Image (cartoon, rainbow, N blue to C red; front, side, top):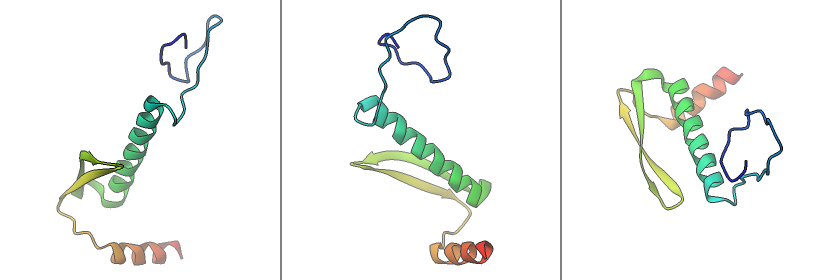
Length: 88
């Protein structure tokens, strides 16, 4: 809004020039990536609770390196089978 980033919940109080940010903009990609990481971290917490502490350490090209610290043991096949049983 008038060359300044604003959240979408702001109320316009006068005429302004609006420019929408998209994934083709660097700030748009950055915002999208941050949101995706936060959703991933929330999902990990929902599945493993407090026993796992994921830490986003650094980016690797188009990906992220996330260290999973904690007490729980990861068994993707066992988790998948458990999910299938719970979904019926």
